[in-house]
Length: 577
Image 1: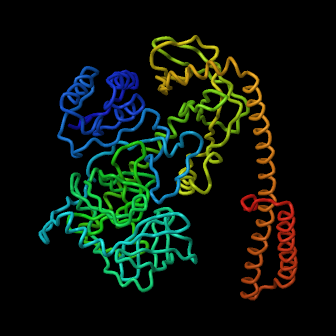
Image 2 (image 1 turned 180 degrees about the vertical axis):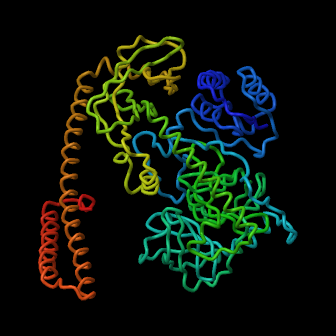
Image 3 (image 1 turned 90 degrees about the vertical axis):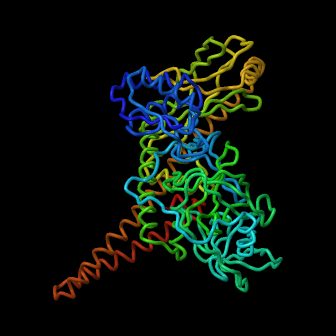
């Protein structure tokens, strides 16, 4: 059953108490922070796809606290993956790219990889309902495999393995992250055993799509279908090369249509997805392509994401009907609303210190990672944390002396798409991640119980981060016997922070130089264009135009000299932009 909130809980105090009461029920009830958001939105689902007894328990709690809600049969046959208690920090699904290459994880837990799937509202408002068209009967999985397999292929490029499918006799659609860069050839393996050469023609890195030309393939293209006609529970088939096992046929079901990640709506499907499936076709019951298999949901069994085929219209021709187009536009509008909700949640929850990770470091112990928003890069910040074990609380005064902007903590190569999205939405502005060792040797020895770490300061109910008690004990013993090593680590962090500050100053200095040089050129070129227009209109501007041309030539020479000097100093290219 779904538990649906009829009207928003307007009173903040009432909403706070109700959120805490719901969180105390435990999974699959929403976490405290998630409940506070949901309770402020009329018509939102407090829980989705839960058992009837548990749904009734949730409803009783809501009614007891004065909230108006009701039960309705769930539109999703299986429970959607729940948002983790610490996942409110992020603006996307926790995903792992399937092309045989790492997606890139910054620090211990990336803000873009921490969150599991979040609950979304139901069908698109105002969109025409999908109609099951009369036509060819549903095919069996065996029939779909026989129909579609000859139109698939396996791609290999520099150790990466991916999948793809033909949309024309020599044209393949696949994921961008599994192909070679344009101009570099890749190996293509066809189901009939032939090995040909493929070359990337077009690509869209934000959608993670690419087309590949395979000369001489002469393969039958697959028919493209209507993804908007899918409904939860519909059978799906996809073909790929998981773990290098070429042309493996998988079967699954639609879990959710329009699952938002980085502003894009995906088909969430329930099936076993593995590295190497990326780029393969997602087929409906008629053997028509409705999506491109792109990702799996990390920390969840048998959940994958496929990019709906209408997104590929930027690279290939995708047929549609007026009804399907209307449904697609409504889906995009809903995805945009879900994205905005994620952005607002991220901005709201980073206003206070947020604990989002604890790492165990050899010869050091447990290290906490904290996210917080500052106007400028902080130096030393003392935060009060608390360790709770079996009803006992140990206060911890933690010095966070090492901070980095979140933007600098992301890998510019592995996380480029994610980083571009964060930057474009302004989510990295002022947000920093800090690291500090936890002085657990100051705490008493705990014998039993579950251990939880939380931020002790700030308003509201702090969320707790579970830590294995065995790691707490090991960190306590280590802190008592390795004080010298710990001090050495702290000195290394301090030196690293000093070096990074110096590097950041150098970066700003070089960027300022190049910015001023290019701004001068742009100003002179704009003035030159205005003088040429004035001369064309019969005005006298020849003398000033000659002076501007001399200054412009000098400005170009100065920029060239600056480039040469920067090259001698081995200044990175990104500092020159």
